[in-house]
Image (tube, rainbow, N blue to C red; front, top):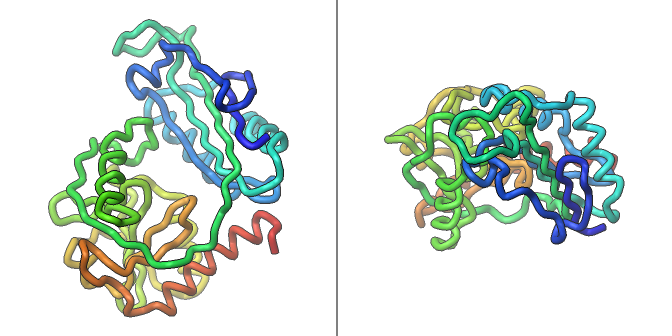
Length: 282
């Protein structure tokens, strides 16, 4: 199967799957999600993604009707049904199916689990990407991976229309993250990355990058940084589940980074090599 859909135990071709119109995901975006990649039947960093999924649900006071191990078994069972090849995996839980009401439904209403899978090549980071900066207009719960993504959609569209691969968001002068990635900088051999407060999502790849830096003896500072810091950085690094670690060479149409390419390349290759090892590719 090249594309697969799952909804509360029902499995089928993604294009043929349907969901109830009164699922709260449709009314309110009332839910949380995760996305991961897989190779050779192995979901990369699966436990990290599942842990964050449960943390996000708990922050929305959503009690998931399955354990982490049961969710793993669902995901792995679906992976095993797919055709051979790299996979992009998405899953979400909405608060449930109920008549439209802003209040939480009763305890008898359980969260709905959606999963989609599709064949998609996981590529090694290649050419540098271009970035634009935009004011961060999202709400103040960016640490929760919720379904409310309209600001990210609009920022991504603005980046694409500017011929860029991502939009770097900022609140005033403080850089937060990108539309669908984390952003960090290298300065004088130090990785500087925003702290995991309520203004950014605690990215899985970001966490792996921090650990790799520590393994390689690269100092790490988890602290806020500014637009001026971004513009003067030796390198700008964008990290995500699908990008791994990509360096930027332009920011708002001006040259950016390019002052420590060896370290940027070393970190990017270390992240990608970890993915290959964990998915039994090397």
